[in-house]
Length: 560
Image (cartoon, rainbow, N blue to C red; front, side, top):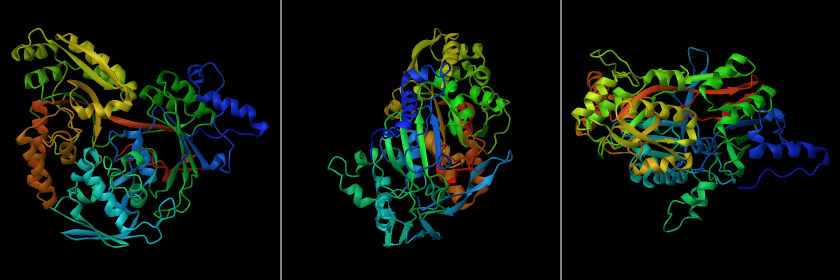
């Protein structure tokens, strides 16, 4: 992979365009975007026409190309999704508002052209014409090595595989070059869905093995900045923090050949100026898609009507305030409940989310719980109640703490934390806001030392027991950011998974309602809202589909 900038144009007729393009990349251009003419962003280099190239602009960029890597951020997921194949994927469905989404309950072939599932195993037949990007045939040995890697590297990928009862290398069998089998260690409704998420991608084992060391037996350092896959796209150019360029893999056999030949993912890091720049790029027709802008900006773009704006509620997702349950003062349940009563819920909905979210607070006390997630909790803003609980917990005068957030998503996190800081101060809790760079956020979560955080989590598999397995189970996975551990909670989560696998509806409903209630009573994290995912795209861009991972899938996109 060439990590250099896009090559300079030598054609003198293109000199002016080159200068404008380089100007775009400079910080001064971003800062002056509202006052200066918007620079051209398209290089006429090579054969790809404007019609076959997609320009995506966003505020953030990948810190790792490999989802198996340590601390890979969400932008890194997008690289993995588009550059590596999985055995199978999901079909499509149309939502009530007419937008498209993946279909949770429909699986479609990808690297595997067919499969047969029994009570004890599932056997996949691999495509015989599938190849990695360098032309090497993909075999079942590569699939096994990839799955062995996922369950062995530890951290997020290993926990993710475990969520579907994919835990041991012995479960994965290369029967022959084009037959791969997964042996089940238990009945689990989540096993098949878990095979269609990003983590069980298929890696070029022999290529990676050339770079392994004693300290790095799975070649994670190599795949951090190199693609070793056979997916629909290749990373052809990369400049860290600025740009990733994807070229279509014209030999891809695991689905219909994508219509978009090249994707240029440009990062504009300054949120304050990005709106002016991005809006002008999109409105002029130079940029095709923008994601992760503030809700206010999406609302304005939608009202202007020059581009399409698509908004979806994020499935199984919650924006929340989390409290570290292993250390004082948040190891005291009354302190946590006090914070829950001190949160300015409606202000956050109005001033931060601009109403583009589902409220997760204010349920009627004593109302029957739904067998569903997400659902609202009964806490509301009640400062008198918060002060009473703090006094009962031994903190009548409050205390001091730190409130941390991911600076990579400061558009939401920063105003949210300011509102929380102001409200907590009214009950005596003095907070210092800690802004952590997005590239370091996952690593800080892994340490589990931050006392109070603003964060977001969505469960890839849209089931209540899956969300709680990640966020509340005593296994203390990375996304149990509060280090909350309780044996009764674990028992209900495990029982719900068992009931789901066995089709025991009564037991399932009882345990789901039980663990939801316990999460509200003990409130290790305070759900604030179910957020939306929005993006702006040119009216001639079609095929966008909402995915559980909240990233773009380039394979479905096209330009009319």
